[in-house]
Length: 130
Image 1 (tube, rainbow, N blue to C red):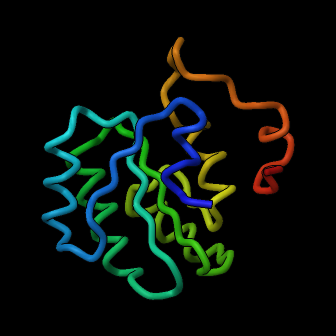
Image 2 (image 1 turned 90 degrees about the horizontal axis):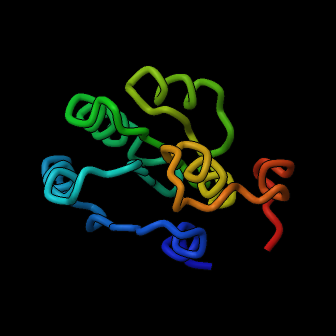
């Protein structure tokens, strides 16, 4: 399962900035695109928490009205981590691909062309049937 396919099958366009670059490069990639409906900052594992905090903070400053999802896949479900990222400007934090998909669909602004969240996703929370 590729992360890029999750939103695409739900009718969303996905633009991925190159991983591992500088925070300024990630900011430039977001600013160069059309105004985003949502920004998802993702990291795998326990490392990179300070970098993610810095990027979320900068994104919140440059995109004050854009929902920001911080995805920390494989980092465990820590209430401290969730609170920490929320205070830097993340609208929500996801710890799995399934949770990220659910939160992306929830955080996207209402749009007549956006499909409704399937009942199974809304009921299941992070447990999304495949």
